[in-house]
Length: 129
Ligand SMILES: [Mg+2]
Image (cartoon, rainbow, N blue to C red; front, top):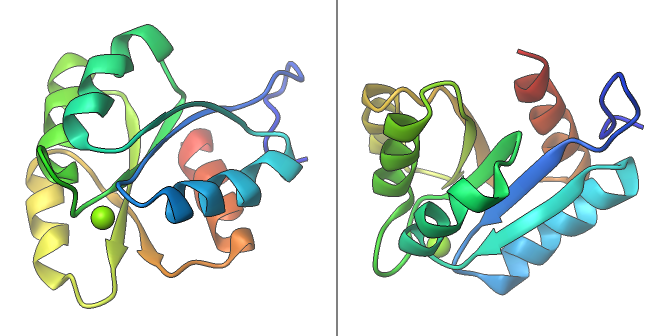
């Protein structure tokens, strides 16, 4: 089970995406491997607001969302907690995203569409770092 920590408890994940379908895909990929989805958010503002009360180990963060986009939200969360692990979910062809994300301290990306195993491996890799 790739979603469990050394002590047997689940790796805690917050899934942020304005698409309920994508949030469901993240959940369906991760839960069978033992990860726990501790929160979902539909835009960046919501993610920032619930972050402090959920304290996820890893965040999967969509880029394009209404109200507040994922880059701004991730940047805000990194200001609160520079050690927070965040994976940007970028659509194919979003080449500008990486430089912008990196300037905010985010170095991990997963391209949409993703295979369940890719998501599992990525979250595990980022958690281990
Ligand atoms: Mg989106």
